[in-house]
Length: 339
Image 1 (cartoon, rainbow, N blue to C red):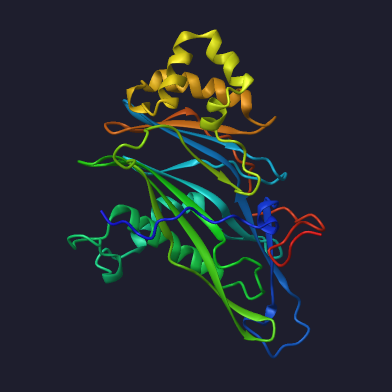
Image 2 (tube, rainbow, N blue to C red):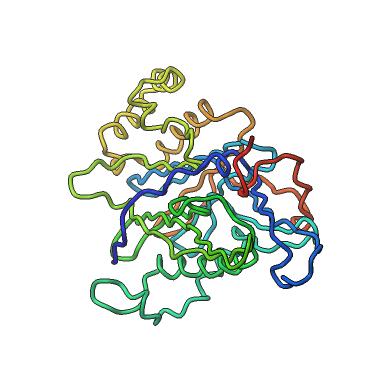
């Protein structure tokens, strides 16, 4: 098992963090620099925004997501089945469309289970750092998503106002590695641009930064993991709310001795001693108490023997995804921070 460059994903600027729809103006000179007056187009990326809470318990891995409805078109983070023992959750720029042509450029949540097949495992730069052999499952998935993101990014020829450390898309991988146990990673994708001509840029997505969150280091607590997008003004984590004795959660704990026991295990770093049934009851009650009004939620359990099963299935998406809605006038853009 390789371990790459370890750091958490960078903070996202307000120009990205406040928008559930990213609009990137693309100069029409992409294919015709010598055709003045050609109208510009837009590429719009819908964001998956919210919090992802993961509990590795005695007999399962529980994954709960809560939408952060920062805009009307926000999409809830939703686990996607990748194999019998692994799921992925996308955050950030997820589904890309062209409003002018009504064309879907990429639907990453739907495509994700198939992107792994795009990589040749024998690719030399994807060999594990220890012992050689084929690329790991995490690397195969990460490279497949990278290739797809770059197919979309090659259409971006306007300046995108993100620093080198700011991610465009993040992927959380959750599951079991045979003979290894629970395995949790985050993959962070950033972009790099080069100016080729006056206000004409080429864009590529860089190889992802990999960070392993589970298993924890020896002696570290085994407790709740939580990820938020956007990270600016992220809500207080559930674990911190437990430490703070948040009254909304305390009311639930005081009403049921089993809920108090589960909370205690999480606080003590002993999530591996909690049964999935008890943790599920606890998470559903607590998240319902702290989630924003009308926020959509999902929850699933991943078991090593049986794979993913829904506890709270994803909400139905609106029909006709190939017909994107018009971006509201004045909506925030990657081309500049909102005024």
